[in-house]
Length: 284
Image 1: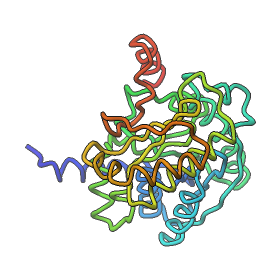
Image 2: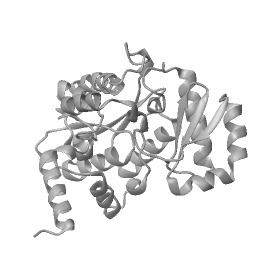
Image 3: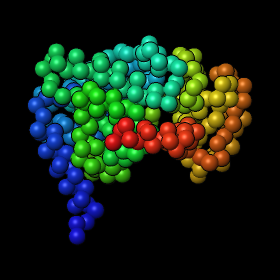
Image 4: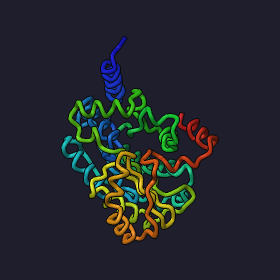
């Protein structure tokens, strides 16, 4: 029976075969754990002359994330460009439907595919992974419709395996907290505005400066619901007054803490089982 290490190595070898079967690729590069690993692997298996990383800068993408992406691409020696997009200009996006991510990814690919074709790059790839299957990930449907490939998913790589390999290869992102666009902090059905996104960004940036790495500020109208890992709830309480004052200054009327702690996609908990199964089927 193969060891865990051997299984991971086999998946990485499969990833290499998938990438090498492509001529040239544009990598949708956010600088997160998955896209960083995908970029590293593409450079390893294809060479930098066949790879172009593109980062989309928009209202939903914090400045700190953009700067980290630029620095990381530079450290890898990857050809890298930053383009400017606006999710709020996408018809239907600001209304914040449950398939909001479909609109976002569809628009992203609408930007990347013409660039790829104009530069002679055969494929656009992005960092979807095996864990995304069966979750609420409408962006996978957009990728399928536009012919955008997800090599990590195709190779069967999971988040834990990607972190393991990232650490093995010396990627600084191996233990980077998971990140999702700022719109994911606003409950479905509540309008997304530039003002709300700015408030969320400033609030999370403040908490990060206090030392909380994995943090979400979910915005419910003028109420901020802070999520950090359950083991760090006491640490937030220790600086509660400081946090309260700052978030009130940012514009929140009430500041609360989620006693269940951080969990990815907590706003999806309001979706019915039927809605979740429909999304999962669309992503399969």
